[in-house]
Length: 196
Image 1 (tube, rainbow, N blue to C red):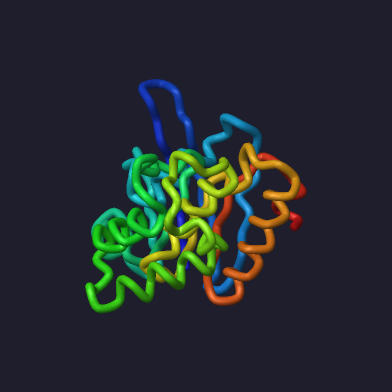
Image 2: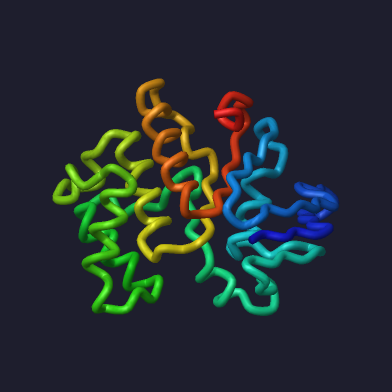
């Protein structure tokens, strides 16, 4: 599902990522483990097309992500560590907006929003204003955003960062459920996250 070959990202003389190569087969959950500052988020931003690599290649679902970035991006749902949510919007309204931006056909938007609310366990707060939600709920709204277009690949950057132990268990359970039908690449600096 993902093939990364000799990926490098340089900022002047500093190499944030150097010569990274790996594959994530379809239907697998893969943990991307490393300490803070190791280049995990930079790598995920390159895979998702938000940051251009200095050198290397990226293929998503067999599509060259550098030559065909729009087609490659349609294959994935991305949840960054700090989800760029609109705090003044209501949850369902936000997901509808994001579905439209992601090109979900109008006839399917209501169903996709409903399904993503259920999958991310945020249906109970769909009418609440995002800025009034706890961090755990905001993280799950970010996960619903990643799911709303029903991509075959999920890329999750530190999905449990800043959550309390109960919220961490809930997010782990959600990821386990999603992994039954999707390929998942998640980054973390916490070894038990990968083992879970």
